[in-house]
Image (cartoon, rainbow, N blue to C red):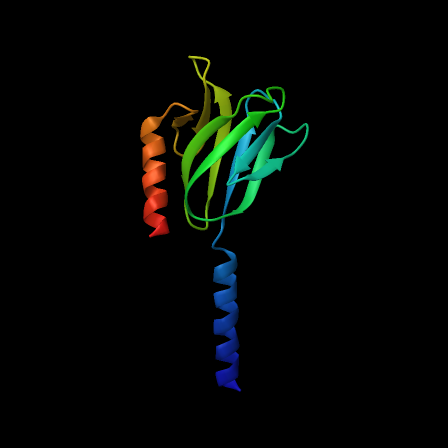
Length: 132
């Protein structure tokens, strides 16, 4: 009986650890403009809401496209790396140069939209390494 109990405890702890292996992304707009997020052709939208929480993301590099609800023709692309079983929190805002940035609330730095070639190269190289 004791052997079966330990076996089931081991199985349930493995299930609990597996359930915690995904991450989530939190983005809030400082301007309170509603926006949409697209990640890997999946579109996340909450109408008339200036924050988004995207659950169940896998660890690794990803491109996040943000489109403001009042600007349907332009998207802003950000390259970021998701940690395993954790979260990333950002504030979508305009910087002093009037460019859109994602300000990392935990690490205190900004990711710039659309113009970071170095970030794009790192993202592409990381994707290639993961596919091997």
